[in-house]
Length: 291
Image 1 (cartoon, helix red, strand yellow):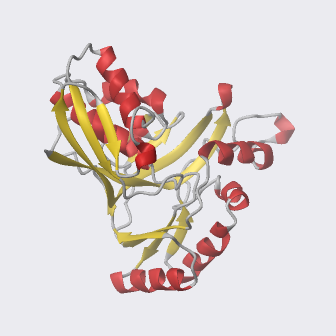
Image 2 (image 1 turned 90 degrees about the horizontal axis):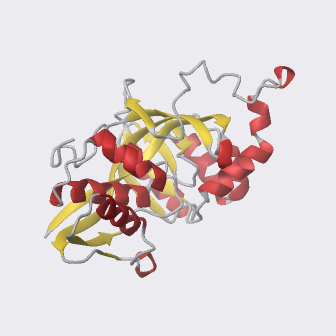
């Protein structure tokens, strides 16, 4: 039995650049991993089954099962896998937990079943299952465009300070965040005089660290975020919300400063889950499983 790590991700910035057909959005965003993980135990088996430490996430409804089942069908694989997911990442937090699980399982299955797909082939296959899955399959910090599937290496410096991840205990639905954004915020990003639908600054680039178009919508949908983010910004070098929320990120000069921030957040009952650690430029499977 072998354990494989499925890391959290955060967005270093997130800008919406267009509203596409069928409700999709074009993005300008960047991804980096964090040293906190779900842990997957994966072994070859006759059938495919997926179990989880959170019973409600076991079985065919799990994204891991859906991705692996489709992958097995596509390549006419006769073997199965037994997958057990030990969950540590909160759901609806903007950390990509379910997508990370699916990406890790797919990379392992690609090897154990002897399929031999390249990284780009895996991304092309998996993108239909979720916009966050490709950033994990890319296996290094990335800049993303399109709906998140057009990836290139992130070439700017990745912060090396201690990181605090904090989640208030209330999730934000990605769909709800984007719907609220479309209805309340997108108009502010367009050139109304020209009748432009595309973001007026979409060709500028260089969004600052922590910029997030979805923050206002997440704050409206998740009231506990306001006090959490405000306190983190008061106490840290820089703090921002990741993805569509509701997890927030803070950079601290030292482990002691990070712990003081966590202690304060807990004293004020603003968090139900926290992590102190570092950002990772590469996926933890990079050295174990080749591209």
